Every structure is written in structure tokens, then in C-alpha cells.
Image (cartoon, rainbow, N blue to C red):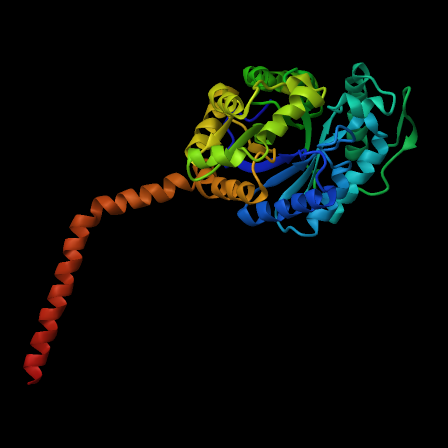
Length: 395
């Protein structure tokens, strides 16, 4: 039920949780996140997905919708998505209302990414167990899709929500609808749900061992579920999330990540109760080795990032539409901006049809240079002789 041909121009973007060191100035941290959106827009990135978290001290954005509204005022082209709204925390009617409002405010640049809620410490504060969140995600997305795609009223009741003849009072700005994605780490839950509703897929754990092994399986699940429910899915709506940091040399990249990599690893090793993202390493050297040697990511040059993306393309068994970099604050803000700039300059062209074209043009010109340079030189000399003859004739 999906496009049998691999997607064409690959899109690039980021997945911004965000991750900030506890104890730093949160106002300044969020301001830097907004400035990063402007930098990505300037560099030609296609999209950015913004997370929702309420605890654990590092992921500071509580409302991706509010952040997107602010970022949209200072950017022109980049599309901005919720990455993700934790549907188990919210009444589905209000989620649908907010994303439609954003769709209008951004003139079609908003996207909706949904998931169950990744941090157990978030859910615990509102009396939710992780055993409940996935069922609530499924029920909520069903309601939201009805509200967005139909003008019929929706009546729905469970232990947490009671909707009575609910309907949207605004229809979406986007025609027919903005992008909607379900999140996946390693299990088939996200692809199963995405296929049933014909949405896109955000493979957040694409480079973890379990996530990498499951890539092709995830799309198989999407296609099977879509076929069973009379929907279609499109690989161009499949987004893979990975970890990279780029510099002019591998040595410089390694120096850069000494700024904050250990704190990021500590967060997943000892703070966030999110075992799917467990990462090994007792010191910086071991952490860097794990990222580069296991395929978890790439810390190094643009060529290393190209190789990492090509590896994911092969594992996906047919390609995907967008590569999103997980924003991690391994490096300081200046080095982070430089990494994104290098990727825009030296990596994107490999996957957007520009690298081969200009390299081919240069190679053809180089091959023809000796012959054409000789002809050109002869033409210059002949013009000189002609001019001398004209001067002699006048005299």
C-alpha cells in the first residue's frame, strides 16, 4: 500500500527534546533553543520536532505548541512539529484544537507528532502508570483523527475523558491535512498505530541496537496495518532520528563533545527511567567509542555522517523521507551551530541530488580542460595576429 519507489530528495531536520544540563539558566537555555531554530532555518533545514516533558530537570519544554508558536515568529521556511505530544496526558479534543490553531498561525508549517509519554516521572504526577499510556495513546489518536478528518460530532468516554458531541470549531488550514506522525523506538506499537491511521512514522530509536534491527520490520508493520485498515502509507513520511556531531576533523569533533557528552550519558544511565535509550560508558573515551563503533551515531567529519545515513538507508530496505538529528548539547552552542552548518553544506547535497551534479560537472570540465585550453589559447593568439595585421594595413 506504500510507494514502491524509494523517496527522492531526503529532508533534514532535528528532534529537540531538548537536553540541557540541570542547574543552568532555563530562560537562557530556551532562548538558545529558539535561536537554534533560526539558525537551522537559515541553513536550509526542512523541519524541527519539539518535545514535551515535565520532570527530570533536563528536557525543559513543557509545551511544544507554545515553543512552536514562538519559533514560527522568527523563522520563514522550516516546518515545526510536536515531537511529541504525550497524548495520554491530554484531552484529545484540546490536542486537536491546539494543532489546528497552530496550523493557521504558521500558515501550514505545523506538524503533529504523537506518542504515549516517555518519562514515567511525568505520568506518575498525574496518576498514570506506563501500563496505561499506550492504550490511552491509541484511544486518543482515534478520536483526534475523527475530529480532524470529519465534521461529524464525536462522542467518546473512558476512565479519563468524556467527550459529548465534540467537534472542532476551526477546520485545518492545510489541505487536505498537515503531517501527522506516530513515534516508535523498538516495539511495533508506533508502526501499528501509524499504519491503521495512514500517518507518518518517527523512528526515534533508529540507531539503538534494537531500533536499528527493527527498521525494516517497522515499515513492514506499517504496510500490513495500512492494508488491513484500507489506508495508505508513504515512505517519504518516515523520519529516522540519529545522533551526530560534526567538525572539520574527527579530532576537533572529539574535543567538542567533551563539553557535555558525559552529562547526556548520565541522564540516560541514571536519571531518566527510559530503558530503551540506555547507553554504556564510564568515561568520555568509552562513550565516544560506543557512539562511533556501535553505529549508534557519528562523532567526526561530514564523510562519517554521510556513511551513517547510507547505513540507515540500507537497513531501512527501501529508504526513508527525512533524517532528523537528535539535539543533544554534547558541544557548546558555537560548535553545535557549526556542526549543523557543516552538515547542511557537506552532507545534505549527497542526499538531495546536488553533490553528484556539481561533482560530475567539475569532472567533465577537468577532462576536457587540456583540449579546450589549447583551443582557447590558439584563439587568443590568432586574434593577436589578426589585430597586428589590421594595424599594419592601416599604416
